Length: 187
Image (cartoon, rainbow, N blue to C red; front, side, top):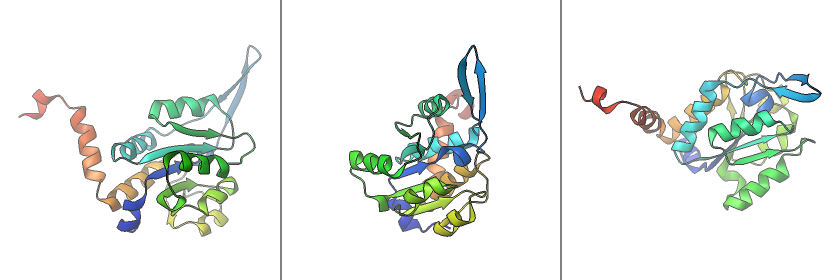
């Protein structure tokens, strides 16, 4: 359970990619001497991120790899705050994001799974670990998700946060309403 006062104080939620937005698997290939990398994303996780954004919460994606797949997924989700560091140094990029938006770390949540996430998890107000996170990471987090990375953990976190804020019902109902044919719902 997330404390409602803490939930209402969260202005930005950051997500790791490999092991959080994905199951951690990476498909590497070569086509015509061009390196290709593929990742699998959970569609319900993406909708959870959409709900956060609908509720006025800024979303950031931080990863310790550089991948066109991640750039495309962030673009699809309308996530403007994206940091890809090939050496896995995420904290400096995260702090630059906060500075740019005039936020403090305690106004943020971060969902991680492994050691490259630890520096951020230790400074945010609401650290969260996916169900398959390393035990050392879970010990550092206030929120322990049941679902695994790439298999609904992000959606689980988004729902928990928005429910604690009292914003879940408005978010999903607004989403559905925008996509409903008014002539069908008037009955």
